[in-house]
Length: 399
Image 1 (cartoon, rainbow, N blue to C red):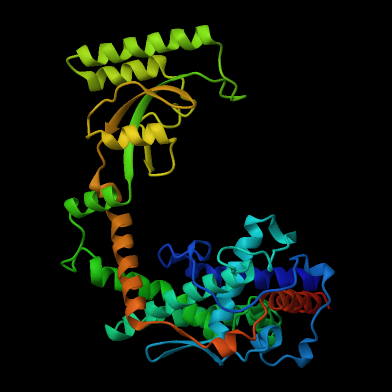
Image 2: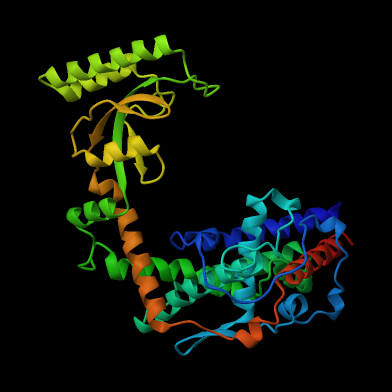
């Protein structure tokens, strides 16, 4: 029990050390895509208690142990920058973890051999996603190097302290701390590099698009970005023609009555001296939208999120305009297009513009994969061995 508690503390400290990794913009491993490389077979489960532990005494390089690739082996280049197996395999593990969570949690099995598109297997797709994420963060570091931007030195000192604390929690057993890092496909050096990414991202963002950069997005640029990305705000008065709990249509007489009511509401709005004020009054009195209580000021949304008739009508309106009656699968709508406050979206726009600049720089640098190296990697077998490594670390903690 004492050993298990100590392992839990180690993992908690490690989690805190890793928390800096989540601040690097919006580059979620689940949102990337790529071309094709590698192969995939086998299956894996995250229930490490059912997996045979690896012999840790035989492991000197965790990356070699789980993939057959040495941690310092080059798997891709970007200009003069080399991407090692260690950093790539770390992100590969993160992408796989993300899919496991999406497909059933810690006991899910991933369909490595399932064909996706154009003959590409799921395993190959996952490997490509991992390369996208890896090269994104490497591009950040290359941009920082070109602009003489260095990470906040406090990151290294804080990490040193965290590492020392982990050793203390492990009662002086540094090897156990090293193994805890291995279980997350990390080394101390890689953890530091990953932790520095947030600092580099924020500095690059401010230098390129911050308030003092001379390139901060203006109101007009924010509005143009909102238009480009299809984001908009709208309110609506909804009279339903279906039972919202069962999605079954209402009887014809009720639907006819509701159509007459919505037509009358529109006529009132068209005749009003202040249709905007009247809209709110009628919305609060008549609308049957179940989301009204949670969204009294309307919906902020983007293309593809609302039913097509609603979206098409809303996007066709100018700010402050009110639509005619619009019919959707839910019923009859009257829609009011609302203004967007640029200040509310400036940070999102700034991040998007910076993300675009990173993607452009990555394209300029070019990514050259070492196919002969990556072709050795079987992603299904890799994940099984990662599970075996994690099981070994867990078993060591229980000794």
